Amino acid sequence: MLKLLRKNLQSELHAFFNALGSGIKQMTSSAFIQSRRKLKPDLFYELNQLIVKEYFTDNDGNVKLYKGLRVLSADGSTINLPVSGELLKRYSFFNNQKKTNDVVIGRVSVLYDVLNEILLDGLLRPFSEGEVALFREHFKYARKGDLIITDRAYCSFESAWLLRQQEIDFLFRCKVSFSNEVKSFYESGKREEVIHIKPSSHRSFKNQPYDQHSALQVRLLRIQLDSGETEILMTSLLDKLKFPHEEFKTLYFKRWKVETFYDRFKNIIGVENFSGTSHQFIQQEFNCALYMSNMQTILTQDAENEAKEKYQNRRYEYKVNRSLALGFIRERLIQMYSYKRETEKLTEELKKLLIANVIPVRPGRKHPRDVDKYRQRTKPKQFKNRRIAF
Image 1: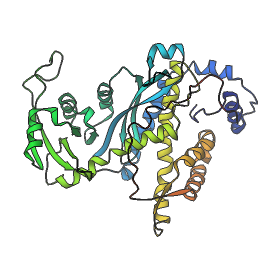
Image 2 (image 1 turned 90 degrees about the horizontal axis):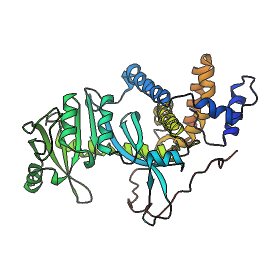
Image 3 (image 1 turned 120 degrees about the vertical axis):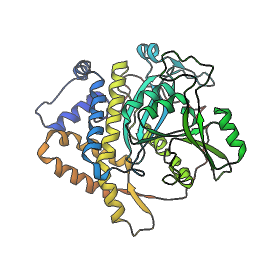
Image 4 (image 1 turned 180 degrees about the horizontal axis):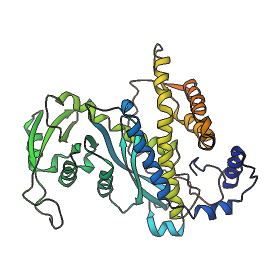
């Protein structure tokens, strides 16, 4: 399952035991399905948390930071799920504009280290659960010394308050309508200003860790985009000497890495290619995809660094081909787990293979973003026993 099931189950099982060399020649897909029902999805979730913890514990010298801060970003997306009675009941239908292709949609939320490209936490929930509520569930995986960057959908007093209670910094893109103080700042034309924000007086404060008199000191920054648009950023980074205004445009742009993560997660990792149609199996495979995303990053980092050094005199900077890297890792995963004595040898062979298969990074290329591009498109429905066998 950690190899990510992409083909017909019987074909995958045959390839697995053939590569394992265990003497087992055959296992039916029915036997596999019965066995996987005994595994809780949390097994793979906790396995991912284990490698994340080890990465940041045993890799201190190589962890990338911004002025001593670990830079994280949270963002949400949706994924298509197989159509089954159980998933319809749990996740519900979603109609497109033409109502021609009813599909089951799940909401995804992640907390992502944008400098190290490590996924700290990922959740798959019903579409009815809001992005902000899922965002706050990620807070337990952040720590003192982190900076969380988000777009304007996540900017709120409550989120800012909860993060500061844990001594976690934030950088939110902020709506002009957030408060009268923010609106006044926008109209003033100032580059930056330190203000106090308060919770909305029209809400209930029952069971909240703050009341209507609570206030939080934040810094507002005006950022002029190349398009001529003006963005307002809100941050807890108040030190103007350590964090000067001119650095925030680049700093906020770093959150784009979480967008490219979703592209890799869906189109390379292939998270939507589920082999099962039950909630248990969906959660199993989603958590396996989280794990493999991090394994791909960890196993390619050394190769990335060596590739940059090896090809530094070429016209373009070069990076590891992520699609090929995942294929190479899947091929060697069984041996890496099964033969501990050869792990170092296998990882070295893998690194050489990755360095030999690089692609150029061409700066300055821009593709206009068409937000309506996929609205009228439909993905083929996923049916049982319709997976490739080769």
